[in-house]
Length: 404
Image (cartoon, rainbow, N blue to C red):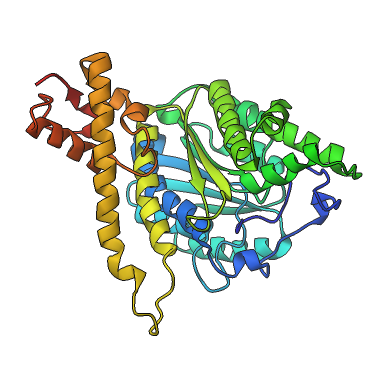
């Protein structure tokens, strides 16, 4: 990953046998030199989602205050000047400063990265933004941040390089300390569930080698996942790719059940043909949060696909960028057709239903790719064909699918 200075947030041994407390990625690390396509996706999601989130939930908070926490912030900017997640969020805070106060807490462990981050934060404070740089492990500052977030909605972004907060710290400490409320005390988390860590650590289960660090590393995974259940998932999977999917889904469902939240999981790759680097998992206790995130994820995927295009080369006869819009239009057609089929299937099962009550079923097969505009197009097509009485006009989530 590009924005962390630690392999494990807990002081356990990593796969190299070194203590995580002794390992540090600083601002000179290659992770911070330039942005990879995988980082484009998560940053695009943050840009697309945090402002709508703050705008919506801030209505219920005194003074329009909303708290944002970046648990593994990194230096804030890449060496080439490209904004990292702290810089992007501070830009968002400036955009909504007239009607929302976004209190930003950036936690960073590495010395060099923290110095760069502190410079960025001081610049933001000089512009009148509410921003704080905190050095150390996330657990060290979590109580302080949660105390300062009392009475306000909170959004936490957890993007470690490897394993981050323990399952208990996430469910009992972060979520648990804020109750089950929405509105003024809305609590949402977007986290990186690292597929590379799952593959590496899971490989220890089938490896005949017994290294000194093996028990501690497996135990660290148990702590991160909320128990050893993941071990059977890994052992009984056909291959590591299936294991990654099963374990990511199992983790998300367990967290969601523990905190009373719905969730999204988004696969993130550096290229379409690469193996999954990590899953972005979003937890929200409100239907609107899940809908807003779906929109953000879909729009971010467009930016990711554009970032995956090969660089322009004057010697090439064909430039992939020239056909990008056409390919996007073809994707949209496929998505609309799939959504139409999903809606027709739901009609056969339910007769009458509201789109907002059936998000997952309506978007089955295109979840995280298609968005509201594609749902509306599908409904309008069905209306034109005389298959529903719904014209597809108005708030998509409120559309009620009825017989013609």
